[in-house]
Image 1 (cartoon, rainbow, N blue to C red):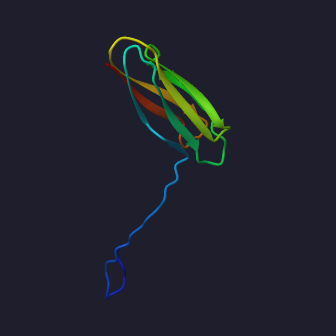
Image 2: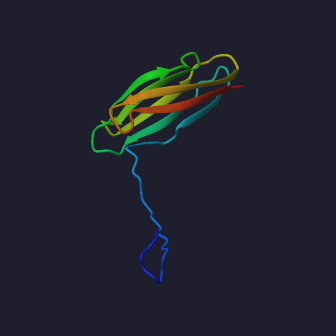
Image 3: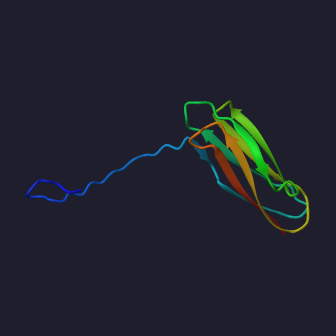
Length: 119
């Protein structure tokens, strides 16, 4: 920053801020390793940090042959658990996405990337 002070023409300002996100996720990426015949579940926590109650609406999921998901509303409008559970199937690596629509205009969508590794 420049100043009109003849003794100190330049000043350095340090600014710190805490930016509060309207929605927090415990994980944005989920990795699940399972044997071909195994059933494993992993959970992602979604928390509304805003004043308004949060709603989640699934709009895209492309791992339905390898995985199921279930949205559990733990605290209405505030805390959700998304449970991903493997479906027994062939060995291989599979990548996909769960996309959710929210009612928060500042954060209209949530994407959770998922990788299933079967060995």
